[in-house]
Length: 113
Length: 112
Image (cartoon, rainbow over all chains, first blue to last red; front, top):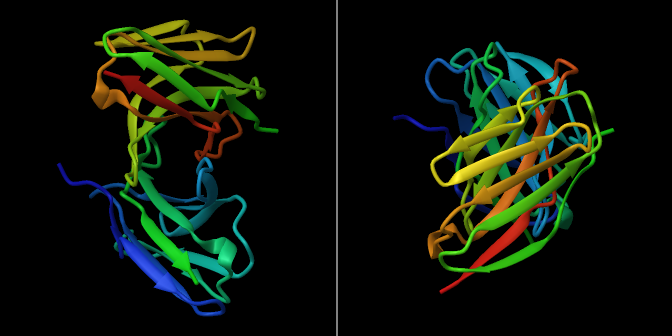
């Protein structure tokens, strides 16, 4: 079965650079969630989209923005990167009407030097 | 607010049962989940329970929910070395938002 795809899997950037993370949800899933997991931390919700509109916002810094496109894939744009942005970024997807399961991607490991 | 707590570490011997505990503060939780995360890997959903249930069993996994005490537990029977991982409980609230609030994670180490 198709799973959530995230790219790239690993990314190394320097301070003050920008990064774009991509998420391709499971086919027919219309809702995408972004989570950030710092080293040794639990995943923290950043932002979500349903049918290409932002649905909920968590602890996403103003330096970050995200959107969902017409094909339901989503991109997380991160600017003015800081050392503290080094983390594993997960994308999850489900059908908007589903109250059961969010399917998580493998994550993108971002390292800021 | 959402505050989900777990003990950080648990060690068990292979073949024994493991019990991982989780407490939460928000009584408006609708679904409660258990996720498994192996080193460097993503989050794998193990099981979930709806807030009006007391117990759910799925093969080696048993979830118990005490809604009065806001306590959730995951029991793994006949724990194997492949069960070594970090286990996160997570809650979804009744506020209409579908995002999950994760606990701090419990690192389970299975000793052969």
